[in-house]
Image 1: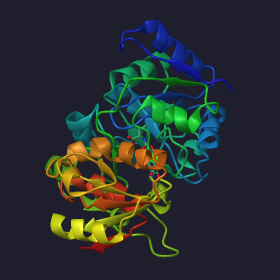
Image 2: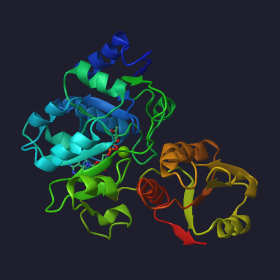
Image 3: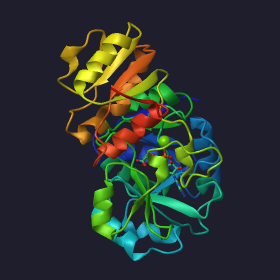
Length: 342
Ligand code: TXA
Ligand code: MG
């Protein structure tokens, strides 16, 4: 398949937006930019189109997709009920990097939710994503536009690297702002539960709707045989080819450890300004006390490690509060939960 590369001059570039929307309307799959990461979009109401997403990504058949809308009203036909808490969250955080899980309406095909009775809904703030949803006239099912298991794509080049020849088109909207996937919260548990941390923090969710619990799978590998609340959490994720080791502790300990254990096939993944302490391959991901800057860079740098054919990455441990929770969660999975105290 020839993958069409589309670059809208702006979100108002109607001709290019319509081209992407036409492909979606005729049952194709198109990678689109969002404020979090690039998504691989298809008509959520068309099972045949949605199946193509799973095939292109090599996505496991039991990992459900997020459905994207462009206006709040569009949620009503997709779910059984829109509770007060969903409205509060939407008022505060939509459009933006938050996904809300609610009981699904019959119109959502089983292939989208992998047979679950719930559906994940998100309203992205990226102007091009929004324009494409509107022009398509249907909700769009879209997982991250990477090959399953690889770090999520934050540029059109990342998407091209993974999916060129496997999808109908890519819409280039430049670099994604947030850099990690949306925060996922379910309102289908007795107490609302955070399933995946992201750009909207646990603290912000609690300020808006009161009690929210954090799912245990955010920080811990699931024990054998335990069913995850969110199927995506059981898979090894976000992984570069390189083995990643997170080193927890002060900079001095980190430097010592790397000097003892590093070689010319390894790389250091540290914060800006710390490069001077290391020789060999040094990658930085944001500023030490600025988790948003780390989120923006993390996937990009994990991919860069692969481009440089690095075998082992020694990563500085991010702080776990605020957006740092999302950064740490992604890094933990990239590292298959390998953390060493230094
Ligand atoms: O920022 C994002 O959310 C991006 C952009 C493209 O919108 N999308 C994204 O999709 O990250 P994906 O498919 O890579 O991640 C969706 C996550 C998975 O972990 C999946 O298991 C979970 O959401 N999920 C989707 N529907 C669910 C449901 N009904 N119940 C529980 N978890 C669900
Ligand atoms: Mg994904």
